[in-house]
Length: 512
Image 1 (spheres, rainbow, N blue to C red):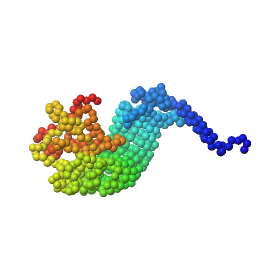
Image 2: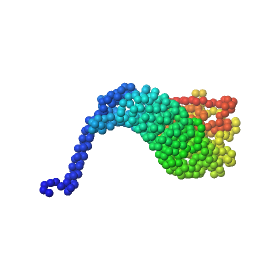
Image 3: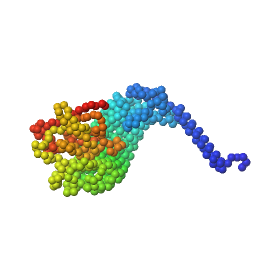
Image 4: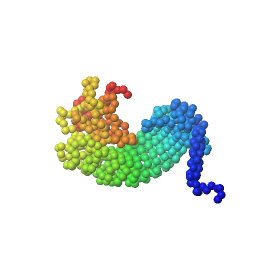
C-alpha cells in the first residue's frame, strides 16, 4: 500500500491520537467555562436582591459563576447554606444563567423580594429557616421551578394559588409558616410532585380528596395543619409513598386508610387522626417499615399477629388507643423502641409486674379489672392509682430538669433529674414522689438514637412541672405525681391541700 499509514495495524498510534484529542477538547471546555460569566441582567437582579435583603457578603467584584469569592459558602452545619449555582452551557459555553439559589438559615428578614422571578432559568429556590414575613410574591407564578422551599419562616395569607401554575415542581415545602384558609383544588395540577410538606400552618377545610392525583409523590407531610378529616380513600393511589405523615385532624373520624399497596413505605405516621376500627394485618407485612406511629386514635382490637414480621422497625408507637387482648411476648422483649402506654390490654400471669426502664413503655396499658396479682405495680393500671395512705400522699412537685438536686430561694429543694431520655420509656424517681413517661423521637436528624442533651451544659434549670411537657418534636412528656391523690391532681383536693404547682425557670452560673 506504498507509504500510506495503516491505522488499523497501529493501535498504539490510535490511542495516542485519542488522548491528544481528548485533552484538547477538555482544555477547550475549561477555557470556555472559565471565560463564561453570569448574564449581566441577572447580575443586576442579584444586586437588587442583595440590597433589599441587606446581604453584604455577596462579592460583586467576583463573577457569581466563577467559583471564586463567597458566592457558595460551605457550612458543615445541616440546614445552613448560602450558595448560587450556574449553568454555563448557553451560547456554546460562553454565557451563564442561575439555576439554583439557596439562602438557608441566613437570618434574613422582611418581605421576600419579588425579583427572584426575573431568573428565567431558575430551577431551585430555597429560603428555608429565615424570618421572612408577608406573602410569597405572586410574581413567582411565572417561574418554572422544580424545587421550592420557604419552610420555617413567618409567611402568612392564603395558600399561594399561583404556585399551582408551576407544574414542573417536584419538591414543595411551605411548612412552619402562618398560611391560612383552604387548600385550593388547583394544587391537584402539580402531578409531578415527589415531595410535599405543608406541616404546621393554620389551614382550614377538609383534607383534599385530589391528593390521589399525586401518583409520583414519595414524601407527603401534612402534620399540625388544623385540616378536617377523614383521610380520603384516594390516598391508596399513592403507591410510591415511602414517607407519609398526617396528624392532628379535626372533624369526624374514619377507619384506617387503604395503604395495602405501599410496599416502599419506611415512615408511616397517622397520629391523632381520629382513626377507629382495627389496625390492618397488612401493616405488619410492609418489609421496609422503620417507623410506625398510630398513637392517639380510637383504634381497637388486638395488635396484629403480623407485627412480629416488623424486624426492621426502629420505632413503634401505639400510644393512647383502646387496644385490647394480650401483649405479645416478643414485643416486650425487643430492644428497640415501642410504646404501648395508655391502652386497655389484658394482663396475664406472664405479663410484667412493673413498668421497666427499658425501651418498651407500658405505663397505664392494662385494664385494672384484669390485673389479679398484688405484685403488679400501679403504674400498669389506667389512671395510675396511688397506693399510699392519705398521710403519705404528696401534693407538691419540684424538679431540677436535667440537673442535680438544688435548693433555691425559700429553701425549696428541687429534686435531681439525671435520667437520660428515651423515645419510649418510663422512669420513676428514687424518691417515688414523681415519675415520667416519654414517647416520641426527634425526626429527620440522621441519627435514630439521638436524644436531647441532659447534663452536658453548665446551665442548671429548675422547673416546677405538672401535666405535659413537650420539646422539639417530642410527642409527649407526661410528668406523673405518682404519690398524689388518686395518682392525679384533682381541683378540689388541690385547693384543700394547698397544692404547690407553678411553672418556673432558674438559671444559675450560666455562660452561653
